[in-house]
Picture 1 (cartoon, rainbow, N blue to C red):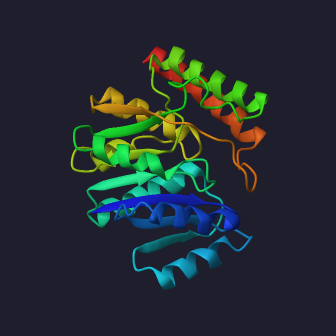
Picture 2 (tube, rainbow, N blue to C red):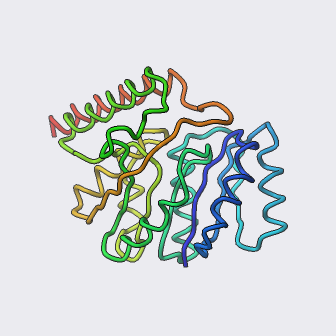
Picture 3 (cartoon, rainbow, N blue to C red):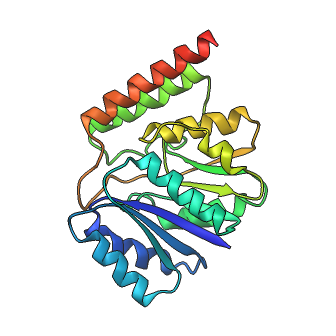
Length: 233
């Protein structure tokens, strides 16, 4: 069984289009939406999808608890329900469902498959220059400080639950955006096999990014704290 996890926060205008786009590929997936108390009607859209589709499930949380926390709750749900493959992606429409085919293909031979925005040099060409600068800066900082060459901060992934222990994913303590690089770093450290596939990532067309300046600063501070903790240990 396969499940696709999609965290949401005020993504009403993207939910239906994304769902229909994915369904056109006939991937035979269950869907799990994790919503952090959206106020724009996102929950109502998810409930409509549930009524029409037996493969759609949801976790409604009482407040904004962090993107990393949303992934953890959803991944725990998937392990509990005995799914053998877990896919994760963003709800903003920037993750093209066509790449799910390769994520699933490589999951037969690798423990974790992650997408990489930097293999193809023009992958972020549509992004505003300041966002490209921040994203590339984070990428190189993580690579230098943690000695890890993966594009580790993205959420478009595939986990082979037959190989990866749940506790090894949950060892990542951060509940925000740093969950992504922290979890990948720890899984790599535990010698799980990791495969990257290149993707083209357009800039979001509908809605606005949920990443605030506070999130960016907090992520950088967490990264440096993590680096010095490992350096001294």
